[in-house]
Image 1: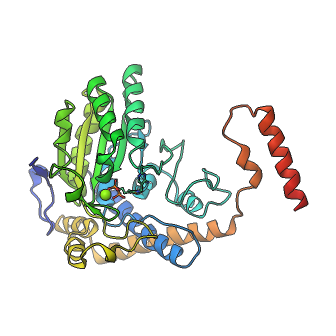
Image 2: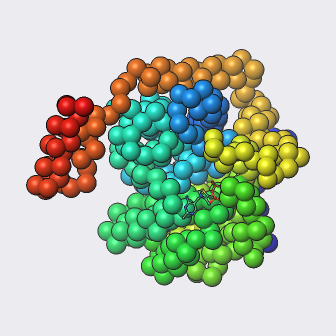
Image 3: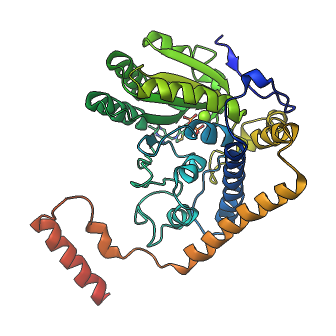
Length: 358
Ligand SMILES: Cc1ncc(C[n+]2csc(CCOP(=O)(O)OP(=O)(O)O)c2C)c(N)n1
Ligand SMILES: [Mg+2]
């Protein structure tokens, strides 16, 4: 079994020699973003239950993986996401209003309401559009990383995927290509123990993901995914290595999907509440809070302020999203061709005429 890297133990204790060199300000930024992600999650599920949005994909329990791995990235780097990376999207600079616009599919949504909720994208934030088919994003992360290597521009592509995605052919093709051509790619497998109702033990003949990198000729690292500093440390090393020609790394972040797969799922039908309870005790936000307290940079007052500020940001974005209209149906014809061909123009005109009459 590949050694599991850990910086902070579940009770918040740590050894100074293991700590990454992060300032107090940086540590608190990480904490704020983890709290913001959780606040968005709580509200996102509630909005779906209230019938105000159609669908939501919670990422509760996986905040440390998202924030720890995307924190060392530079603006010129790329994120190639799965569908459970709202924390990384926020940290990357997609504003809360943009996240909410996408959840509502309104006229402010950069995807113009054409995507399922939680499929955020932003060219400015270098956050590639999310693709729903499991694992299809992994070769894209390799393509971006390979292009960067050819250009020699020291850009890194970080691709996220789940444990379930490692059973897809795309994962293996991507890993093989990246190893052979030494792409500037970092693979982050969020092993949250479940692929909808399939437990990790039924996913693969190995009992971990990291070891698979060996077969493709590069390093696989296993990290405690509920320890934001361990994830940060492993990701920083992998990102620096990829940036300066050292080739790819596979990071397996061992974590847990605390909520349902999506708002359409009922996990009580296939997993034990005792297992969920066990992992709830390992909540990555609580662990980090204990660490910050241990270091003397956390107190109750601050906690209240951070929580309220996160909830207020979410609330403000909801109010704004609900004031906006839907995208115009005429936009349906945009964005496929750089220059609209005659037959699409004709179809658009006929459609607009139809809309006017009906
Ligand atoms: C090619 C493909 N097959 C099946 C599905 C249905 N599906 C959506 S998510 C999912 C499970 C993915 O699990 P994992 O990769 O572990 O990611 P997680 O949802 O746990 O974050 C499946 C089977 C799909 N979207 N695409
Ligand atoms: Mg999974």
